[in-house]
Length: 316
Image 1 (cartoon, one colour):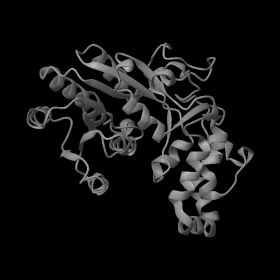
Image 2: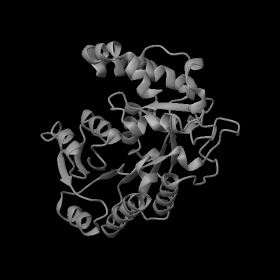
Image 3: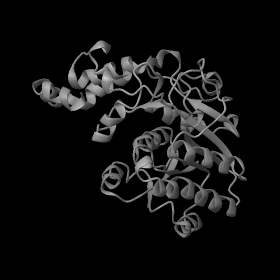
């Protein structure tokens, strides 16, 4: 099977590439040709076909699907996410909604009938902190920012299309080899310490993406999250994640005055149906922490230990 993957060199895309290759799929990767993506693409250049371009360019997408060998399935991950989606909403809508519309239109014109997997988000449920968990896929959807609005618009576009779709709503994705930037650190404080958070390992997200190609997932909307063992309050999730960087820290040591009390769109979820169909929940939070230590390596861990007071000040 030949699979076309958009956003293929992003944090979730590259793990999806690895899962596809591990299972012997043929892959065409599509992404924007920036320095980061080109650096990552070098790892796969002998294993996959790479198409560079902008998903907002309808004519380019049309030409690509007119000239590459037949595609059997599409996994659509390309999307601008927070905080950039909130800082540049017009650009984000052009890429997120406009790009998805372009892709769907091109595929419909070609009478594409293979599996089409769309990477959505639990953000579409809105802020559910004061409701009784777990939140199910039947929960009403509502937009609370540009990002969730874009996901909702794309879901509706896809559901109303002629495609053989599957929609996967990701929760909090744990990515062990992701560099923390200033924007990530600022997001820490935008989640209340007592907000419920259910995480999922990025490798399990990749497994879900690939397993969604099978017939049983057709025309399904499924929540992709880690299950009961990956449920936390934000204060616990944060302390455990920061330990490799700043050492052990207790929730009561967090600067509570800096955290918002405004609910965030994360919660605990009912993944009974998605797990039954996709069989993707394999990794634990401890797996994530162990991989995070491995990714940091002893040299970087030593530097964090030496400069721990400075590193702590960076976070707090």
